[in-house]
Image 1 (cartoon, rainbow, N blue to C red):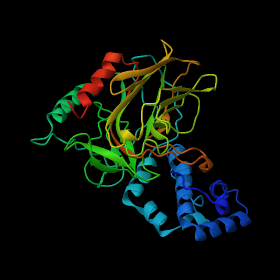
Image 2: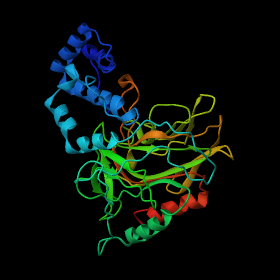
Image 3: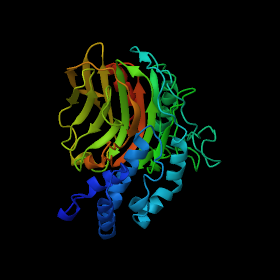
Length: 382
């Protein structure tokens, strides 16, 4: 969560912004160095946010010196360790392979699949950044929960659905690989794991990612344009009432952007940037209280551009349906799972706190029965 700022720190976010934009005056640089020396924990938080905003959100390109030079290059030993960590280094090398999106838009009809608009990176492995390697899929261990075995079989079938845009079963990759494998046959939209750690998922032997620090996330690029879209995820929040918990967020709020999150009030929010530029929010009723902490939940939304409806589901049950106010052609592009870093650190990051186990995006509106089936085959308890 964003650390509280006392009266002496109110200008810290603006100073970090100015230095990152290379517009800071000598006096502002001196003031930032003074704040860093006196308040290292708060300064470290905002510098992390600035680094992510400048480096990971804008075309997945790491910032070039001197953007993080001067006072931002040596904030605290903790920040230096974070930037030098092996996972961060692997992710930066991985993301550097991306090139800015320059190809034509690919209109995708409901039920169509997206055509790649720019090359996806090869997963980074212990053999070196960018080295190609097939991720290891966790097999069902003898004596493990039979529901895990049933889900694994259903997952292999699900991966062949031609309308799937991206599918992350959250199978743990080999040691040293910082990617989240796209399980579709020939799938190339692998995600890059930033900071999040591998832990046990819905069943013994099943893996998931734990999101604990403000910078933790999975970053990905999803090409194409969609009139209809379905997304689903299994997650286990640690503090549902402690703040907004983003599940899937496009970078910034450009035309066609989608923001999907559990808000601190307990509702699920789907925000969509419409064709006319308006930002439209489709909210479910309040569904989550503090009693949801530590409990596995499946959530899904269906944005149906033909029927002009936006529908929320929780644990396979439809909980709300609303008419689309202003139509949108959804373009995801650069996005994050489990976090959102805005273009300016003044708005602060929005980190999900908890575990995420499975994530899917379809280029069509799933029916109530299909969403229910996803829940039934994936629920951890009978």
